[in-house]
Amino acid sequence: MSELVYLNGSLVPRAPAMLSPLDYGFLYGLALFETMRAYDGRIFRLEEHLNRLAQAAEELAIMVDIAELRNAVMATIKANKLGDARVRLTVSAGEGEMTPDPDTCLKPTVLVMARSYHPYSEDVYVRGFRAIVSSYRRNSRSLLSRIKSANYAESLLARQEARKAGADEAICPNERGLVAEASMCNIYLVSGGVLKTPGPDSGILPGITRGVVLELAAGMGIPVAEGDIQPEELFGAREAFLTSSLIEVMPLTVIESKAVGSGQPGVLTRKLMAAYKKLVARELG
Image (cartoon, rainbow, N blue to C red; front, side, top):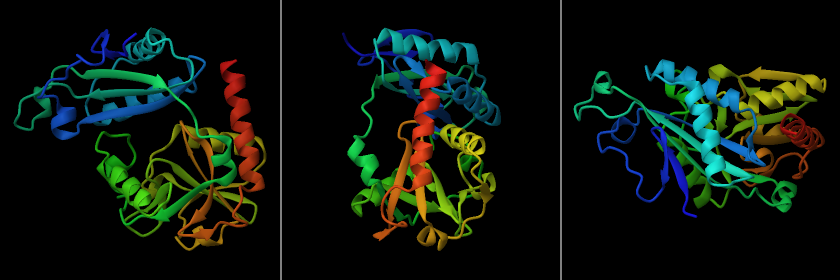
């Protein structure tokens, strides 16, 4: 069976699916997206993903129908007969005039794609990710730093920078030189028994998995500090890890060729990794 995608109300084969050359997502990056992970055909924290997109869409004056998006996501998974899957929901302002004017976009474009997802092997989680500090910076004063926009060039460039250096991820400072986030993940440090992560004012995307981890930490009695993190704290931390919907909780064991703590996944990191998996199993049955 050929891969099916959801496009503006219909499930269609991917190959002939077409977007307008005047779509503002393509022309000007006026679009949003969510990357979600399905487990046995069900998406973890789907409503949080949809609500985040809807809030961002309001900022960009893009009208969305959450019920339509929910149905589109689930229909795409079912049509492709997927269990464990990577799901991408994209909403753009739609087709408009070639001259930049969002008011000429009358109807949003909605696209959903889903494919089987094969997570990293257990060996990778035992080894942990290696990261560099990126030369690309987040602008904490920009709207784009806190919404999941299709303007993704900085993240892609930072990830390419990491790959060229033989690393898995790139940690992006903000314009003040403070730690913000990795190219496609949120970041956390453990120091003095406290779980530290950059706060919302640091120029971060408020990750769905980030929210889950903070929720778990609170329930486990782990002290949490959200706020400014100086770059030198990266190298003095006892533990570090990254999170996203796809990788869940990934230990960060090397930064700029220097071991984080013992160079092995830390105790608190391992506890949160296990707690996250239990929560997914409990919520999705």
